[in-house]
Image (tube, rainbow over all chains, first blue to last red; front, side, top):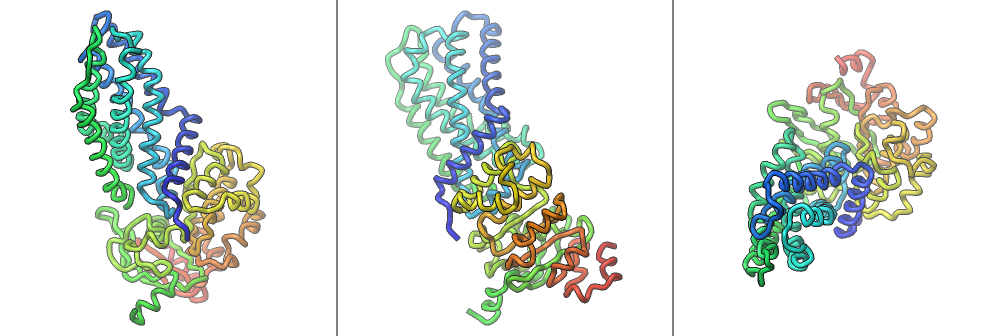
Length: 229
Length: 234
């Protein structure tokens, strides 16, 4: 019996999940609709013409994180309901390949979401130019998304096996996502200053990268126990 | 290696006091049996007797809570990794994604089992599904989905087949066509769960009767007369 290459398994699972999403549209449209709706509500609810600095950064990241919860709750549902978990567990593939695939799926979802969310944010709420902030934002988005994806892939696997997955997913995810929120929002805030500020404190990217790495290791160590009986 | 361990290595199945619980409820209690390679074990019993739980323990999907379990010479759960890929499970559910086509599902499983893609086309032909292989499973009849599930089970050419109602939803002609793949002549060790006792007994070398998780009968099919058979379902 040959063991499959882990990267090949990750790629195959990622392809399957993206095909499922393209045929069912269960997660992405809901995430995009939520984000745009939230920005519209903030636009009218805050009763200000435009946001900048800390407030703009906070509104953007809180909205993105809440939208991500919709995906975290969905990424394992087809596996749980249609036997994908069992089929995967029957194979000799490394269990961590499933974690890798679901992390990659969440990263793709978040990237697509941000393609919609950032222009909507710029139009509805942001005072400074998005183009000025964007180069600096790419790093914050990359590390922020990675943290959300790893935590989501781990917590989703835990929550989907319970009766109350819609409650448990956010309940466990949100406290774990708070450090990601603090780092990403603090990193982004100077980028949204108006007039545009000079630099970004180095400590926020460093702490966020450390948190991502730490959670990656925890997920790697725990995932086998979560998916096995 | 001792004599006992050596003999365990040669057996397809060696269960000694297998017990499995769900919370307070005992689904399997003290199940003990051995099965030699290439033979068929028929598992009979009423609903809730523990048949599906037994299959899931043998498939490494559930851990035994007590007792010793060896499958294809490997102790479970410690050596589960060594038998995965050598076990084919045909469960109530097809274990396939409904929105994907049969071919897409099977290609995914081919990657999971490190099997060449050519094997997918070969199996689709063998079960007569090639013509409908590119339609989403949700659009296929239950019989066609069952054929796709049989392909999934056979992809890695497993040594042990765990079959839960393998002929469900299949018409007699298709059943006959699939017999060389999953029937007694396939040369595999088989554990066959069926609600058709007559059919199961025709194929079995050994019969296990379960009642509320306990062994109510263990012997050859010839030892099971009509009265004993009715007793299994009482």
